[in-house]
Length: 87
Image 1 (cartoon, rainbow, N blue to C red):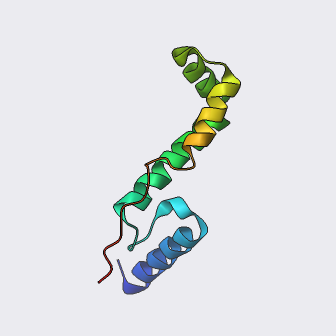
Image 2 (cartoon, one colour):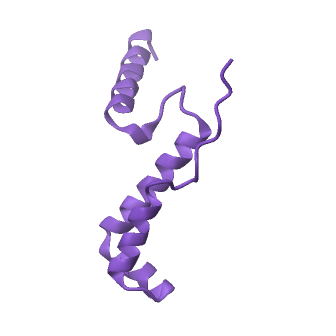
């Protein structure tokens, strides 16, 4: 692998990280990463009707109620953010 190949790979990675929030970056905290994962999961559940139906049947709720619950969970999927330690 040459230096130009590494530069090209790094520039592609930086482009992906700026374009898609969920890919993360070096300064991403553990909490922010977990929030991204949870929100992506809930969005996928809402977007895929068979998965939404599965959750609705499993929890004995209507599909609309499950969709509403998932959207509400997307607001604070991992609870309140931890307090930052400013140095």
